[in-house]
Amino acid sequence: EVRAAIEFVPSAEQSGQVLAIGRRLLEGLPDALAALTAAHGSAIKLTVNLSGAELSTPAILDLLTGPTHRDLLPRLVVEVVETQAVGP
Image 1 (cartoon, rainbow, N blue to C red):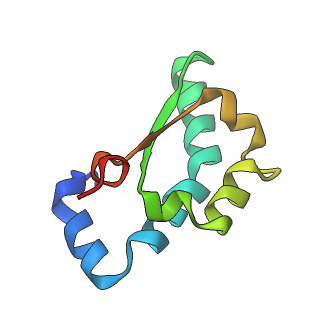
Image 2: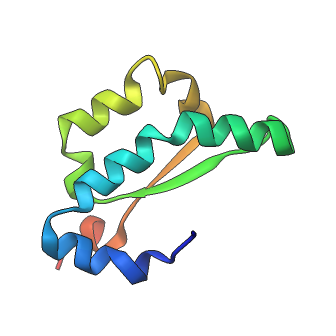
């Protein structure tokens, strides 16, 4: 089931679950990209939104630059959540 971020991100942030959800999503990127490539060709790019908290987590950076994700980087667009980039 696909849900808009506005439906779950606020409660995930309040409960402290947002980092775990983000990591789980990032772990699934290789499989998602493989499925999309098979269905639509190699021109597919994936865009993910990451918070400042996620970008400052070494485990997330290690995952993105590690052996399972390294080949994805040219086809991955990472956007920083605006409220984190701009500040309060």
